Amino acid sequence: MSQPPQGPHDPVGGSFPLQPYRPHTELDPEMRERALQRLQQRKEFAQHLSVYLIVMTLLTAIWLVTGRGYYWPVWPMMGWGVGVAIHATTLRLDREPTEAQIAEEAARLRRRLGRPDHPED
Image (cartoon, rainbow, N blue to C red; front, side, top):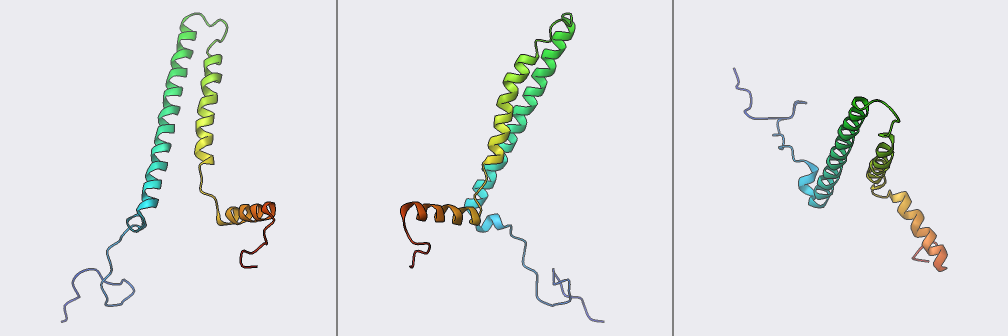
């Protein structure tokens, strides 16, 4: 009886050893850094939203305990809510431009500067 080959091999049936998995971030440290920054921004937004919700719950509880008159917590909710909405919007708008957007902007600049459509013309 023959012994099976030792170590990882191609599951399709080949006999060459598989290479260890290397994430793309190892090959592109700039993208890794940008991804880390993006994850940090999302974490900060989640913290901001959590604190907002906790404080608004506390203010509503104070309103309930003090007699349920005029619903004054609406004012801090709206004021701080605008800040939370702006924070969320900055996460959505902080995206890299696509190649199509870059090409469109370059064409717009060439037209404005009176240059030909193609640099080699």
